[in-house]
Image (cartoon, rainbow, N blue to C red; front, side, top):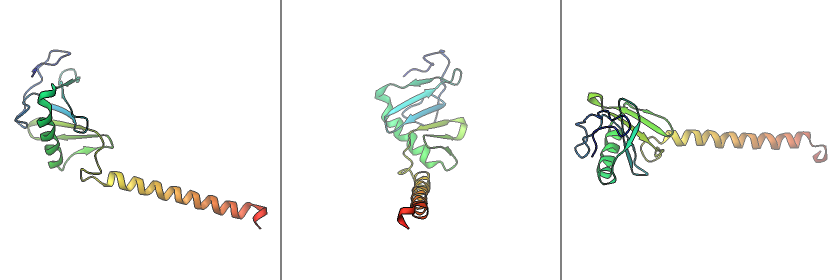
Amino acid sequence: MYSACLYCHGNLGRNEMLPNFEIGRRLAFDSKKGRLWVVCRHCARWNLSPLEQRWEAIEECERQFRRTRIRVSTANIGLVELRSGFTLIRIGNNFLFSGEWWIVVFPGTALATLILAVNLLGDWLRDALNPKLR
C-alpha cells in the first residue's frame, strides 16, 4: 500500500481506527460499489486504494460511520469526524436501510400528497369551468 499521494507525493498520514487499513487520516468510501479512497491532506485529491485491501476496510468504515451519531449527511454524501482528527466520507444513498429512513420517506410522502392535491384541483376546475358538464 502506498503511503504518499499519487499526485503531489505528500504524506497521507496514518490512522489507528482501522487495523486492516492503516494509511490515511481522511478516507472516503462507497460500500455499494466497493471503492475506498485516501484523501490527501495537501492537495485534496482522492487516491483509490488497491483492490485487495479494500473490502475489510470498507466494512469497518461502514461500521464506524453507523456507530457515530454526530454526523452530517445529505442525500448522496455523509461526513463524520472521529476522535483524533480521523475523517470518514461516505458516498452513496443507502439511507433507507441505514437507519435514516426519514430522508426517503418524508420527501416521498410530500411529493405524493402534492400530486394528489394537484390532480384533485384539476378535476374540480374542469367540473366547475366546463359548460358542457352543466
